[in-house]
Image 1 (cartoon, helix red, strand yellow):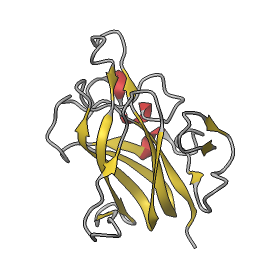
Image 2: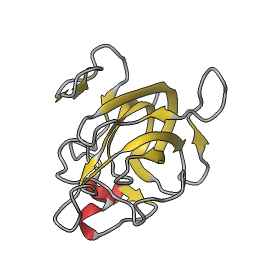
Image 3: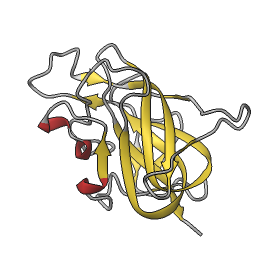
Image 4: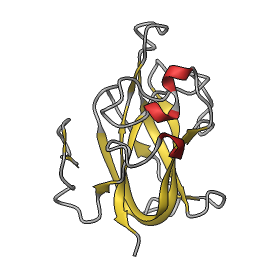
Length: 181
């Protein structure tokens, strides 16, 4: 699969301009539903397994639409250690039990953490400040946005929403990288 910066389409080849930037399985289904978890879930329709980039008709919504920054998270277990170099983030669409406003939620800013064992977590750092990087998220609920970072070794990746749309937090996701060498 490929996401071209500045475009909203996703195609089925690796990111041609960046080595080790393959989609690691959210969209393709290589990552099983049981490998996707979250801090909370609003209802059975918007579970972590609904957070698959593009292909999902809905997305993940946490239990509390207006949580505190850094309180909610979406986690992907890659199944084995990988080299991770980025994420593609997309907003979410709700179903019938949400109002039209709530049906279009997205994350405006977020942080990423990673772990090899699921217990010891590190933040992706801003290379200029050596502080946890605050990434720009989406400005529209249905447009995927690519965010790259320096390679990190990870089996587990978490995205922590820090700021979000008036409708609250809603997210779909893909993790980018390659086999860990």
